[in-house]
Image (cartoon, rainbow, N blue to C red; front, side, top):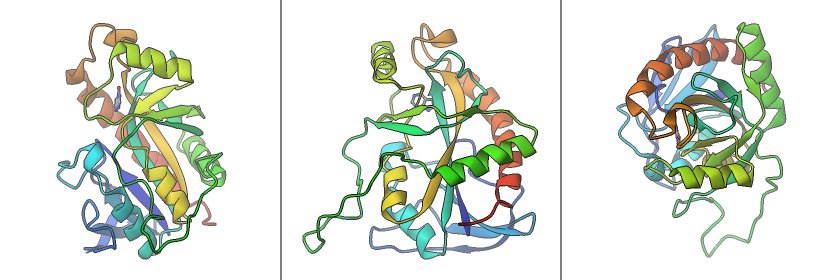
Length: 248
Ligand code: HPA
């Protein structure tokens, strides 16, 4: 089954016909909320709001392990994660959608692996290509079928937050090769790989990164709402097509 993780601006899927909600307990504690089950265009989907249904859990406090574990336990094979980002590359302006293909991880202090504990043998995952390419292509096809456009690929930097970056930090991220910056892409992507889930991201650019574009003297946070709402409507339209693509 396909699972969708919604981020800021996507705490509810309005096109989801809900069948039931499941409260979950996992070896890692509780997920961000109950997993919502339902159908979109007669395709079964599950949905989880990453920051909780009331949007109360900040990026560094999300129980990423419990979230991914719960989705897999309930039968998810594929996970489409929706996340908002700041645009660093000049064509990644507010309102742009992107399906990144690489990650730079700057997070710290988060529970980033399911392979810990003294009783577990040392396990490494291959993470050369952090996103599942087949799922990325399915999202790109869904974007076309929805009559939408998006940027194919890009390096998604993930910072710790919850504060936004300094202009110098954004310059450093750019020198490192980052095209966009968000706060929730990691350890989510790595945990999905550890748990054997096909995982890919739709990134919604909601602001110019610090020191860029109209964020030259500060990120105009009050303008984000006006960008995020119509952009998430476009994401929902894309998801309607993405759910009908084949599973594995
Ligand atoms: N930086 C980090 N995370 C973000 C941003 C940003 O500019 N915009 C949305 N999420």
